[in-house]
Amino acid sequence: MPEGPELHLASHFVNEACRELVFGGCVEKSPVSRNPEVPFESSAYHIAALARGKELRLTLSPLPGAQPPRGPLALVFRFGMTGSFQLVPSDALPPHAHLRFYTAPPGPRLALCFVDIRRFGHWDLGGKWQPGRGPCVLLEYEQFRENVLRNLADKAFDRPICEALLDQRFFNGIGNYLRAEILYRLRIPPFEKARTVLEALQQRRPSPELTLSQKIRAKLQNPDLLELCHSVPKEVVQLGGKGYGPESTEEDFAAFQAWLRCYGTPGMSSLRDRQGRTIWFQGDPGPLAPKVPTPTLGGTPEWEHGSLEKGGRGHKTLQPHQQQYPAGGKSRKKKSKGAQRGPEDQVENPPPPNKAPSRTRRARRGLPEQTAAQQPEGTSLQWDPEAPRVPEKGKRRRQPATSGRRRPQKIKADTPSLEPEETSAS
Image (tube, rainbow, N blue to C red):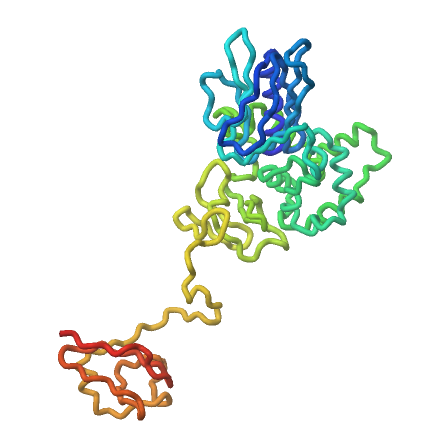
């Protein structure tokens, strides 16, 4: 899923690619998209982009003298799982181009497209950032830090720090791979209580005796969690390209993969949090870790499916054909009765019933009936194939078989058989 750095890289791409272009005409929406229509038409307008956290705002600004006369229009995009922008020739639109802005003549006609393969992306008219989102970790660091430390009493910080880092009310722009990289660099267990981790930052104050350069050096050498929430996304932006998004080139992706230290890298462990998102880490997962994690293919990085290594508490590595559940949910197979019982109800390797030949049973018809107290130790009370079949008083007698052999009938202890009488095979 595109995170804060990918949204900022997308805004840089739009601004660079569209700086010298003049767009014109109507904005086109694909018929399959459920997003709102964009009621904008102008003979000449410019497009500019601005990112904030996990949102991107496009502003369509008509040029002087453009027809019909109208004011600018802004749209706010959220990329979902696979959203991105592409600039392509108008006669070679990519699949899943759900919103299209066309350039005006003269010159070859181009289209700026919002491409979204899985259609989880969304756009809103009006240009307002989504209510409730906190300050951007990249562009509004001081406000971001103050917002977190001022609200530590919020119940969001009762959760593990790995889950709190995905709360966009406080960490707008942090996503799955960023939280793994940030916690790994500080060696913070991902399932440590968030408030425990962050309360220590309230007491952190630089010594007044330090000079400004010494304070800056101390921050760079020993950054805290909130500082890394700002500096780690900046590192991804400085890599250039389009991050790890679906439209990134092989070179972009290779640089991004080389930058990763924890997320999806060999030797790391992974668990799924309560939201079903996979967190990668090294060492002890922390006191709030799930007791029985669910192994799924969701534990693999978003760009590949391979073996899933569970870590921290003796979890074994599962290959794809050994996965117990589909990604994102519980098993669709109905559990057997044995699987539904608790450990205390299950018996390891129960012995199979002893099926003696019918000749032996007929030879032993004259033996006296065995009671439960006379049963040999370890023999099942539900079915004893060698016990004589003496009908109980008052019970309906079975019809004798006319020919052939008869299958042994299960008889439950102290309970008359409810199965229908069998006819002999001819």
